[in-house]
Image (cartoon, rainbow, N blue to C red):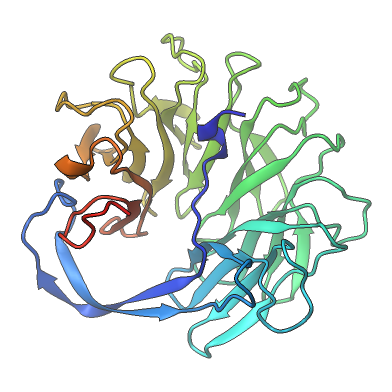
Length: 362
């Protein structure tokens, strides 16, 4: 499978950055070359997990709207319950009570629950798992929904073929919609094995909608993210949806308006071999962030140099968020961006030396 389809955001331990309410003026820097709110805040960094041994990891963190609930997956035996190494479970941390809750328990050894997403109020958690929580004979990866209020599991996807998998769920802030990627043929439309499409699940009605149709059997649509009310979905894909000659294995970022089913191509590679993926969207659907090595603004970005970009839907315009440190080009990548619900803040991973504190490019 091609690397952009497998891209993940990983942390070996979970930290929580708590932002204070008082903002401080900030001079423009290489990471603020756009018209977002150029402010910083006083902050406190808190470690939420402690690995039970050196081989265990806690990854895929997601946080709810007010920052009081953090969900993640981990194979650490955080509560001394005898969890074996490499058995990932879903965990929920409550910052108000400083308490940790284990959400999943694998149906048997070798099962994993991963890639959690949490609703704005923290009551609903979507995730992927091959555990058989409802004793239905499940052996493959499906998307699940956990309701913290009644402590119940709902199986979101139901593939009749055990070779088909569903993953990377993202739940809307209002908790009513879940987007995910899957090669499952849920509606019996003849989707071939391995052709990954983007789907939308209605939490209230349990209805399932197919959002993408690949232009060829070897094309994929992946990494979907949904805005607060489920009206807009952004994703990456190498399908030639609009008949514009998008080549195989050249992912672009796309925006789908659910009401009109109108599809907008956000990116166009500056040359063959340039890629754009790992998108995210704010609550209103106005701002989209993603990573790309395309030279959209003809600024001399070399092939392989990943930068973070922002697209504003109202303007139909791209803004470059990061500029790699000259000494670290092309190895100083900026990747895995996430944007806050209000569209004011972007976080991302980077090996760049934006502040003079990372000269080794780590």
